[in-house]
Image (cartoon, rainbow, N blue to C red; front, side, top):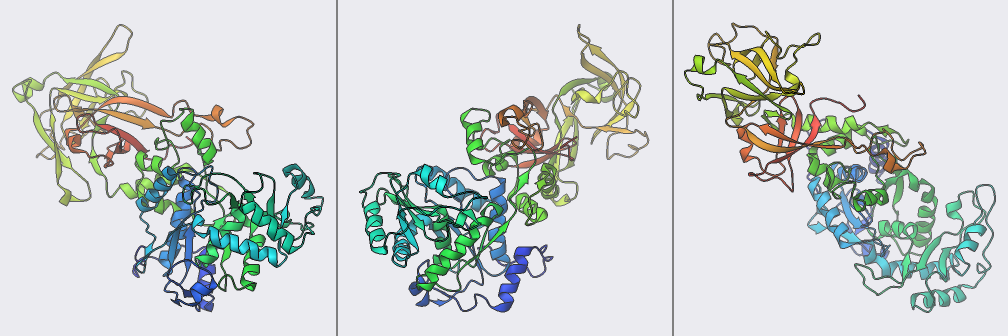
Length: 596
């Protein structure tokens, strides 16, 4: 775990989860617990020592895809609460569905959690677990439920079970197999385990109440037959626990105190408590057992977070992979230029609530800008180049080939980081939008007769431009105003309203710049518009340009972040960037442009 928060830090914003935890700590709800050194049943923990963790949370993803920004919120929440309250957060894989899980996803998830700045090591112990580590106990618990009359083997077809379950206006109907004796059910369940029944021939169901107004309590299935090789347990099992059965048991064996999940599991909480109450009655798990608390999942505009649909975007080549910078995956955000600190800041700012709402993507971008502004080195770049020729350069400087040395701070608020060096010469690259033959009202950049300052360089006066046969401007001409170089005596004698960025043709570095925009063109894709989400993809989500950047970027390393002055924040691409072939991704503009 990370070290506890510094006592001098500002207090974290309160939310209902913090209030729950603080109340439990005040009342000593879990103070008498013991910890057996690792997960285990009641006897295992009872033989242990007082739990060194004041609380225990967990991050329990299923390894069936790459994590996205919603998972990042959950990671920051679970690990952050444990950190702030002297607890431990467990890293656990809910790997109960062997057909959809893969080691590739396991590796990517572990890497994402570490990259975000969190660890599952605490008190000299690694708290890295798998649900499949507990299959033996889950089976033992299932047999206990059967012997106590709390579970039975049902051999109805899937359609029969669905029909007999009822609906919100009609109570369920008892299965004809519900009245079997515990001995009959136990024998049949063991036949399921021993592979004597076909896939889908039977399920084990909890025996609760088929008339419950909560449909999830109408004898939910807790085990099914599934002949599939598991990435962790191989072919040991042909029956696998259902998630709703496995999850509370995992929490109990790991001594979790606060089981935090999203609102879609709220209706499952009564079963969570029912199951753990039954197992606690039998002395199988420690008391007090975990409690489940639900919070609203993250809905971010211009984003979808369905793993299935994200996988489809990858498979159908709408994006270049799971780490495409337009993807909301953690690997995509990282490649886009997001930092762990910016994502943690975002998670803190959006808070934790019990009601669903949409968070504007600009909130995520603002967190990145706020994190990078004091960190990122500055540089000038020209993304849509237009050549500017200073016609009197040789006359003023003594030679057309003369290059004037200029410099600027690496960071404007940190002089200790030094200065960056570049040249000013006869030919300069400027942005195409920095010239207008007929300027609109309020335009203070280059147009015939107007003076501007070339940032960190000289003042020039625009004299005109050259167009091609189609009327497109291909070159701008200007004259140098002598004795106006920035930082020299008298440089401020000539007053100008416009200042523009530039790169000298003599020492410019050619770079590929990828201008990423939102992946979807509507704020709430795949909701109620009636359109297929494919129709809502933004065809302008990526524009690749050949740009000129200042020579200081020759030393840029992969994943290094910069502020391209006036344009925004950019990162040297994590995969494709090389010093001889520089590639920069736009992470965020200088200001919010979403929805405008």
